[in-house]
Length: 221
Length: 307
Image 1 (cartoon, rainbow over the protein chains, first blue to last red):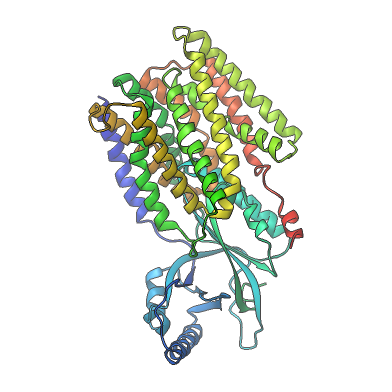
Image 2: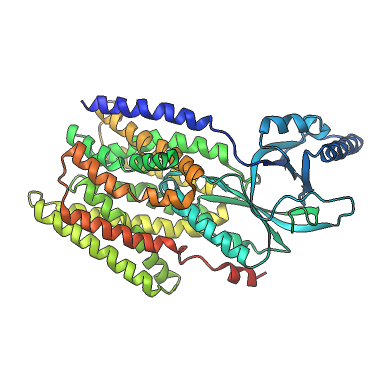
């Protein structure tokens, strides 16, 4: 009798999980993280220069084709692309021509880019580069945050709203309702601002803070 | 609609843990420590693997000796001592009352942080705390009147209350540590320390082997880990994805009610009017407290001033 109950539960859960795993991505943009590798292969200055030239040329081509909307490097290496597609397969193909990608210079991550504050505004020829504080949030489930996940997420969102209300936020973007996201702020930001986030304190959200060098106006600011 | 069902299913799965513990006690002669050790061994790999996949921190932060000690202490408090008290208490009290007592932990977190960090508790929070504890007293009284057969009822209730206290201590303590060391790293090490502590405890207290237990014990402890923890973790995340965190949080509050219903279905625990009344009060109180971010949190404006 009890075993029957168990079997029934298993039969219900397995197809459900499957349908969830195969569910589609939402939004219309994606963000590509070109994460600097901690241990990258040593290459000559000359070769590096060639790669970077090819990298810039490929970026310009993608931008001209309306595929690459925003791009900027992080201080200390790596950078981001915001791309005009929600399909990671399509984006993989777009960036595959990049010599830097071909040379395996970065750890590539492609995530949905869903702005809740700010937007995507590709800049024209005459732009000014500027430096913003860039915070990336990643949701990490473990035993104790799993059960309270929605409540902690609610607190995180409320906290982000409070930060946005200060007027210092350029953009607030999520990778999905259940997931992390990014926060881009004007000027220097104290780490205390982020460590005070209730979701960071409770260990649901892990953060990384960086400086992003980007064309002013890219996020419709 | 599907999002609501997924989130609800997640909450229901989470609430099966106490049921499986009670079933294991009823159908086998397993002791609390063995059960805890097995549950931990079954669930640890899932969380370590998911941590390995989701970790975002690229640079490896080194812990200081003090941080190692703090991680070990809070890890053992949350994952070992608190769980052990819970499993011990469930030998004596119903799954329904266990869930109700545990559900008050946010009030304990609030009280502890106000004591330690000298945070002021707002009048509305005092009201919420009072509503919560009144609800607990009502449900508790309803149960104590019926459950006169068990002389250990009060011992069990005390053990569960201590479990709630140690869990609240874990929340307050880890809340100071996690932002500095990173969640993934913290959880992986905290769980590993706790696992070692549980296995050591098992080694000292038990002469039997973990391999030769009643087969049902493995079924229940595996179900506890997978149906009670791993699958719902996934379901709740997907629930939020579909209906947003606000709605998912509301759906999630069916947890204690779900435990009471399942305890009635699978364990024949009676459903008492006073228990239901108490549950509603506790739910309301905890919901009000959860609404505001924890009092440990500084306001963004304050943090920005430091820039």
